[in-house]
Image (cartoon, rainbow, N blue to C red; front, side, top):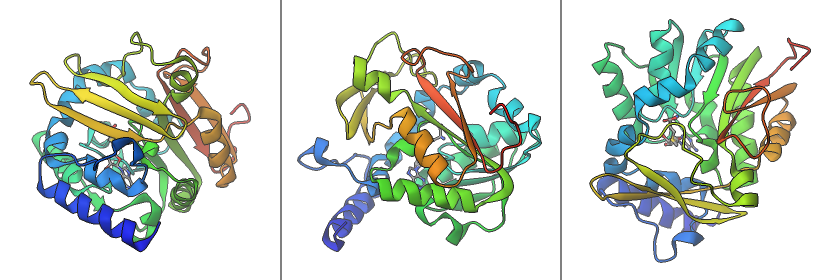
Length: 284
Ligand SMILES: C[S@@+](CC[C@H](N)C(=O)[O-])C[C@H]1O[C@@H](n2cnc3c(N)ncnc32)[C@H](O)[C@@H]1O
């Protein structure tokens, strides 16, 4: 990226952080930059995020999937690299895990800290970008979680590989990475089906793609008060993610579809990849 473009994006991000409006510029579908997530999670959207991801229905649909997966492998020291408003960090703290909570967006981290405080937890937060994670994060973790379709915010292959290398380096020798993504293959190949409910959405919020091509999935989120927000995301294909995770050095990757081990490719809304640095389980 040129230094001029970087300066324009940073200026746009800083302006957005101060304002309550998202700013995608004159040609929104041309915005395909990793750094743009700063300009998308503006304060007003952050405030609304917990309406979007109704915590109760999300807890119900996820069940104890992540808790059991981590506990079953004895992975109690967890780095949540996409903390957002804190749903998983707080859930894991409540289940007895030791959690460090990272996000690249300061407004998200502040909200997560508040949400934790409301539930009598103190969140250990670190403001860091995944691409330079280990500049800010010290120590090695049993597990890294990157959930809520967060990895989709990276637009370049180089940035994806860089982030995965940073995740790999922050894990202990037998650590695991749990990374989820929306089923973009189904959207790209078959179109978006309205029966597909965004599993962590609140009932009141309508989430729908506004524009999709192989390099961009632009979603619109409409709230009951009529307010609308958008996210520009990169539509990650499942097998591509599996491949780059392996190429980052992970020994194995197992992919679940809507938390199930067996599924028809087009059916799940979400995939969850579980990658191991070392192959403990020969079936994985
Ligand atoms: C879709 S939200 C998901 C948040 C949370 N995991 C959830 O499920 O509700 C994505 C989060 O990833 C963060 N993020 C996106 N790109 C990032 C990057 N390059 N470095 C650090 N955080 C990033 C955003 O700030 C945002 O909080």
